Image (cartoon, rainbow, N blue to C red; front, side, top):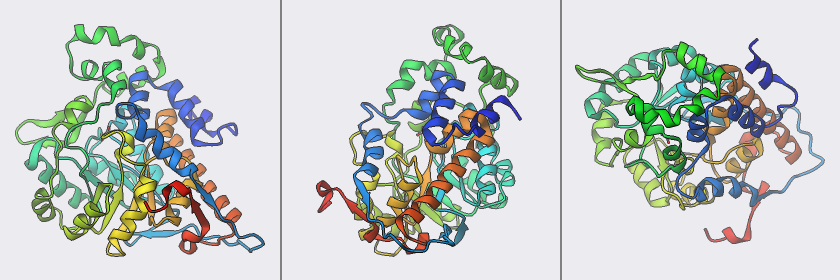
Length: 396
Ligand code: GLV
């Protein structure tokens, strides 16, 4: 057992915030801030979290709650509890095992892993690492031809659904990344890198692993014909080339005959449009507060989207989930399941696979405890009657 895996297994690690603290201690500032930060004033980043506090529970006491069934089905796939692992770009910078570690931990926990296009391990290896379903998240980085090639590889490798992210026509203004020199460190000249190097030297454990792993990874799932895997570029440059429009869905659907999920929906109108375009699920998401700042918290718009979709597709949500009770609240407000991003990525940054496993164990135990305290015996039995929303939300 490594020192990092011992740290995440400590009985003193009781919640996701504790894993965040460990990730902060192991990762250089540039990597931690990329993961932790949001756009501009981080208003939406904070609103996502706070929205959960505005929802209170209405427990039913004196009810037997054993056994308690945490399972649900997402697009027909059984999951052991209703949290999927969201696509997280640059995971291989958080830990050398990156997406492989996360996918393996997801499978072991009985849930689904969603692989980001901006990934450092080959999609075939990521799929092979998990004993459960793996989905592929698409950005158009590298252009249409590169995307079609990735989708064909994903289909052959056995990925079971495609998640198309529509909220990134350009990158949000993540000010922490600029200050930390992400652009210079990932793409600049040696001279321009110099002022930013001390933050890497301050984390010798991470730095040693990073160098042994070969330094800045390539993007092996974006292969531009004749040029090989695309080099890793900073997030601003990467997301400047990812715009997906409704028109693109025509060719994407031809290139991907399997189920398609649209991620990044924040209004009833866009949710309806996504379903009309063939989505079997939508993800209510503001990209974890990393794109347009000052859009509402996802939990707040979830009821509007659920009403608009009206049972024609499944509704998932992400943004600000740090506790099992957050997961239960989202389900009470109509989500089929949630996606967790930072919550597991803090674990990944803290200790690779062991950290992700710990994050999922914490969330699962939380979900079970919360259900029992609520007096409910299954995820399937949850509904709006178990929560009250803040009066200021009424009519929203
Ligand atoms: C990548 O998708 C990011 O939000 O950083």
